[in-house]
Image 1 (cartoon, protein in one colour):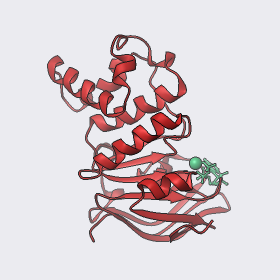
Image 2 (cartoon, helix red, strand yellow):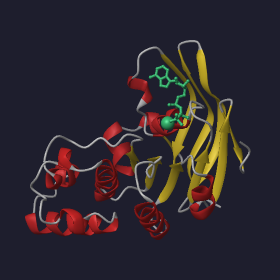
Image 3 (cartoon, helix red, strand yellow):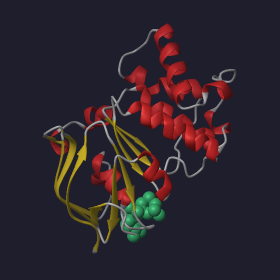
Length: 228
Ligand SMILES: Nc1ncnc2c1ncn2[C@@H]1O[C@H](COP(=O)(O)OP(=O)(O)OP(=O)(O)O)[C@@H](O)[C@H]1O
Ligand SMILES: [Mg+2]
């Protein structure tokens, strides 16, 4: 089985606190890997490491390597890495601008300027995330006015606009009701034919429903299966 991302003896410490301890793990291509683990064990730290967000933190020590399809992420420009690896944060971060601009931001940055093309992609991705029906008449209104669950779905839709190869999701359903949770799970299952998905969840049932691989993080290490 091909791996999309491999960590090689990855360790991360904040000051004297070691959070990730020598993790060597292969994340499978076009599968959903669900990461379980108790609060504070380092799940968010791992996702942020995979997107090279940690090196910007103060007082941090990172060692080992992370390879995306065989190339070290540390040898790539962050822009290129983050076009290939999308991240949806644990707390949804919407930009203080309209829903439409949130969605078009990365597309415009990557050179898509045709309004027709932008409209098409934005509608498609909002539909994917189950948000289109709720926002189609207020695309020009501020995204800050959306509810928590709507913001979360906007962040998922926004991450999909650039068609990443890998989607990292940090507890994407924690602010969603069961209906929207199931909708997102269905979406992720449909997406995985083209995208490798790594999802952090506190919900064992969710991990069982959608995870092709389930791993548990404990004492800074990852192990296969559920062992909380
Ligand atoms: N920027 C930081 N500076 C210092 N310590 C940090 C920082 N970010 C996280 N930590 C510490 O690293 C440990 C792991 O945090 P992390 O956010 O990765 O956990 P988590 O598994 O995602 O937890 P949760 O399930 O509550 O989201 C915690 O002890 C936390 O306090
Ligand atoms: Mg976390």
